[in-house]
Image (tube, rainbow, N blue to C red):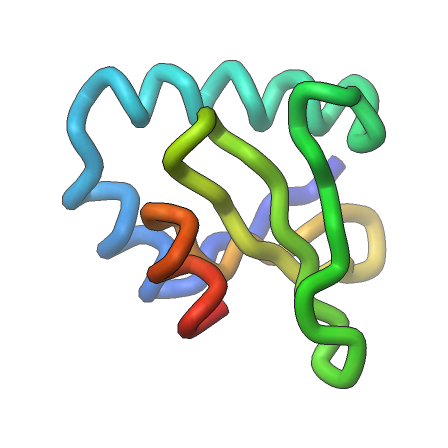
Length: 86
């Protein structure tokens, strides 16, 4: 699976606490193996723009678009921030 990262995602990721980065890495491995894994809680949040969300942990979500052969990671932030500007 191909992973593309937006500049905003890269900035968000750099600002995360280390423990959240570790949880995200685990979540992305789960996503790669089975994007419907129950712990990810994948859901479409903007049908018009094709934006989806998945759980990194109880507080943090990452948003993405589907692209040919993979996903483009858009944001990773606290739940409210990720949904406000996906």
